[in-house]
Image (cartoon, one colour):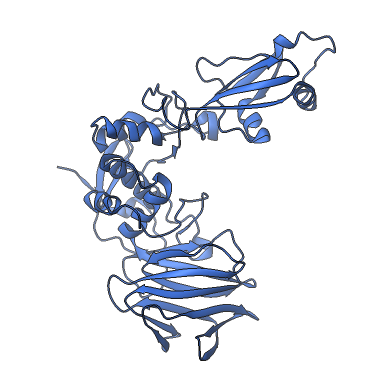
Length: 383
């Protein structure tokens, strides 16, 4: 029987909004949004401010919300409701959903479940989705993992995303919400819409998270493709985690992101090395620039000079640090493997494991060492 983990081990962020048992996720976090259009797509919503009802919003009705002189202007098709400091838009039916379309600037529309809390903040709108945990998790899983994988993969990804949530509830405490919707936290671009198996896999793993030997939520990192070998956490983030150790992974090597290639002019590469304090003679044998990684390395080495592969990847925008270097003609070719930082679960490897009949616990235990899958308590105070 799975043990429960009571969240006295985590100091939870308390956000004083009367939407019990919902988490707060800031939407369009990296965008400066001035105007949005809200449209219920299922059920009806109530718009309120300071406990006063402003309007009822029925299915397919349109509401314009704009930042205006440190306030929020609300208007419908036929009526301007005025300006307010902050507003709540909450569902009247349990399964309510809505569409958000940013107008200024113009961005793609997104669909969400749950409620909204909106306020004016530094000449832009702060848009916070208050949503049930499992609805949020299923949206993250579809955003991060796509809509075409097998059920056991989705279960493993749901547990990983839930673990991240529980371990990072205080990440945006000063901004009065739990997580943002971008890669700074977890990508969350809509409700789960394209594969309902994601919803069922999320619900079937409800309350399950991954913990370390001290019964604490792990840093549940993941990436697209490791290229055949994952990376020790300390090689990327400087701090070691016992459960994030390099492993050989043969499951991902025939997937879309398992190999990549790039090139630069030889003179540009030599200039780059010189700029990074390499001592290179003008009559250097260009073959000496070649570099091989049969297993992952940390540094590119030429004579006694070194530069981290992590820096090379960042400076050139490569997909990973797992690459060989060869010179040919007037170019330096980079023959690479994998996509992402390489720490933790390899998504394409995990997808292949699910195709081969592995269950979610086998998938998780492949990529995280000395861990357990446990239940959190069903009542989470402070959410």
